[in-house]
Length: 365
Image 1 (tube, rainbow, N blue to C red):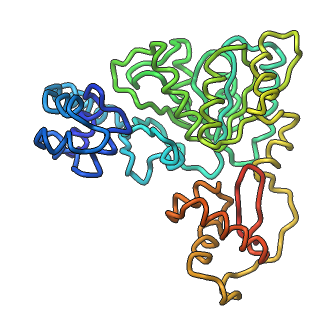
Image 2 (image 1 turned 180 degrees about the vertical axis):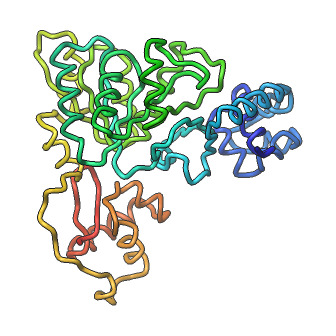
């Protein structure tokens, strides 16, 4: 494995250098050059400053980075840097994507349809049955199920996905040298074989409470939508839902009885317009544009419209094979939101683009 990987791992270990600061540095230096750069060159970068520059200059934990590199190699773990094509591309649309991810598994981290199913660690019988039923109804939709491998709704969703041969990925709040909770070891092993385990944390990292919100941001950012099954008034599921909203992802919440404490969080999300009410799997699929039972529309080829600008043709090519979120189109083509909105509207008026729920667009075909 390359020295570049060693220095990327080292960069994640430098105090006060988070994902945002790391990417600022990498705009100016290679990973190796960062640790050879002069203090003045480092602190001159906007967002770094003197204190962070000093932290880089003083860094001496390369042995720990090398130990992690050896662990990765021994366990055949994939280390995915933010510029790796296999890195979850949806995360790059978020403000603070991890610089480096560790992945054990075979499931596609960039599958076309990815849904987070999350909820309380102590679901009711209703919550358990609904989780299983929803996953069962997704069986033929080629949807990847993402969750956090926690006790309760997470584990139920993972297990149901495995039973239905759906791809499922667990996002961890610790390193890949352990599984938490311990009684999910068998489930985790099955997921590695038929799905995957993903984390931004190195080996030796404990699953302490400060790591769970960081884990939740990956769950929210790696997916197209988040479904909250049950949640109390506070909890990790509400943090994930809030992050999903910040990332412009769709959020759904399963309603429950107003007297049930495990439904309070979901009802609050719905009441405050932070989530769509979940009434059926069909309704959710329709909202996301994932319902495959629509009548086929006439194929319209861009070449039949010579008056299209080169940018309009690029947009059509971008959404020719699948519906994409507006932000994803803009990021792919590096178009400002104001220009993209106008172009999409023009293409829609020409009958070349159809607008789908959840700010998604696809070419008419």
